[in-house]
Image (cartoon, rainbow, N blue to C red):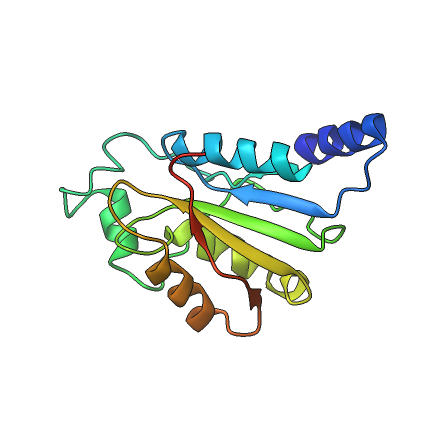
Length: 161
């Protein structure tokens, strides 16, 4: 709630009619940096999708098959809890940002989409991702296949903004 109020105050102070939201999940800060640059360039409101239980370094150890991220990504039904929902009603365009995990978006992005599914159906969604080695294409195919009623645009890998 505090983030929504701060965003509304920023909009009121600048006189902008915010129609664009940059919603992102960042486990290590890389995607957060990219999201902030996109929000600044688009004059958009920035929103962090936060896990109810933050990820630790050991949670993110992709070499450990028992790490939290490995367990979640190996379970297509996993939906990690998010800290709070976003009020997306005022926005026409939403950039959706995430790191690439196992070739696709982390399961927390599914959690966020499914928590907002009804409101997302009339929005333009633009995926963007950061990755140490994968492209964004497989993750965009996953999003389009999993959520076919949503208006997905082509995605972009944004490692170097």
